[in-house]
Length: 113
Length: 112
Image 1 (tube, chains in turn purple, yellow):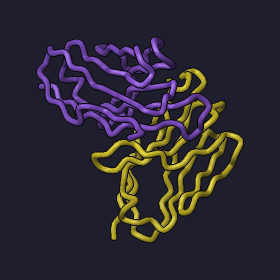
Image 2: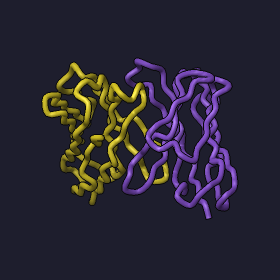
Image 3: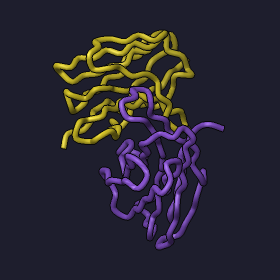
Image 4: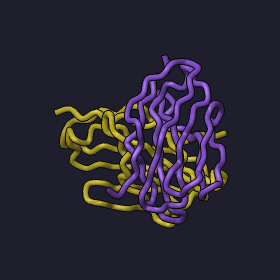
């Protein structure tokens, strides 16, 4: 089906473990984004990508790594998970200049224990 | 830096109008957006307005834009219990490339 899908939907991991959140879109949008949502902070940008092999930091990139080897995939990796990374993570995609082109996935709820 | 500002809570009765206000940061932002998030769900684009417009109406939704004051508002007419959700104002400031910058969200509670 067309759209943007995130996996897993829910994840519990231990402090210090590496975990990867997946994001896949079927529109061939050039831009993709990762946000985290926390109570009291709204949504904050972690990383974004303008095209395959082009990524850039957002507001809160520390502790995260991204890659974009293919246009349709934009995985987010927590190299060594910490409790402060417990959050809901949203992936989004868009085409530049498209006013209505931002589409969000359903989110991944990550708990670090 | 400056933040996109929204009030955190709004409570209305079913059938009344709701007005959610937002102050954004960059007067040159081309598009301004309203997103809706229902409990446990992702963000859904509700409406957006192009910066050369003062107003946009879409069924029960009216967006007003005051560029001079960098103020954006969303009016929901005849508010229903199904409108209960978190509403986010968002912009794309020039310095952020094409990334949306969000306010913290306004929780709208509609009582019957």
